[in-house]
Length: 351
Image (cartoon, rainbow, N blue to C red; front, side, top):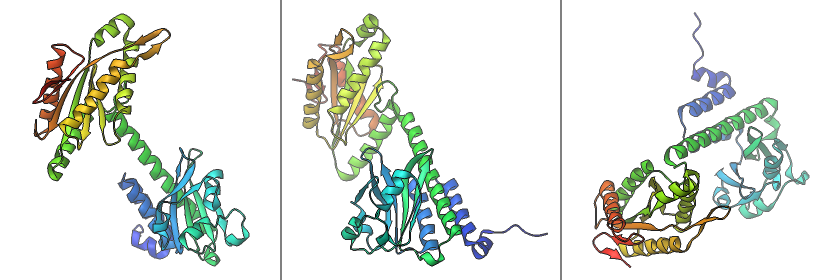
């Protein structure tokens, strides 16, 4: 009986098959995009032996390519470099979705010497293949100064296959990212949901304890929101919740978090923020709600206020559950009295 070939046999008899086997194994055993792409590019480098190589990814918003992975003497200089879509050999490949083999860049007018000038590198030849998925270009694999005398059709097919694997890895990562976003995002407002709130605050408790930081939590409950649903219907109410959620988020720093806690309740997490600074944020949100007319349809502009509570770590609580409870209790001291105001844990009502 003849035994099936093992991985070691493949590497000795047909290195191309061993490379594809290893990359396929990495692709099916890990959802970590960086790890899979690193494996692919290491196999590319070991087989094709370029002087330097890189993986450029497409930034759709800015219509540019950036160096996601770069290896070689010029790697550090490339970290901040971007190519316009259509610029240079890689930019051309990203624009048209076709692979290019350029044995002598001095004879190709598409070559852009700008990168060589930045890196003090001397490019002689370039191999570029696109990472394509569903007619969309995700990125480009670029190999510089490969020995062209040994590069033939088989080598080109291998490079194309590796680019396809890389595209699958990027697609998989995007799919997982979308699924994760769905599990932590509130459908109505687009903010994070309550499930993600507790996980995030637990992480912040750990981080703040370790580094000696303060952080604060704001708890907001909209005043008389039930009247909106009763008078105008739930569609208008949902639209108002969305507009308020976006208003809150737009007034926060990039490091802050906004959550829809449930119903007409919102929570704001302010990392590395003391109680006095958190009160400044709460007042800002209170004043914005007081002065904003939310346009919710033809001839329908509504203003709504909120009752707010503020609590801070570590002064008011030592864990995620208690910090939320304290902020919630402060909110209810306002809700059960005047509404449209702020109460601060340990200080009471604030002007």
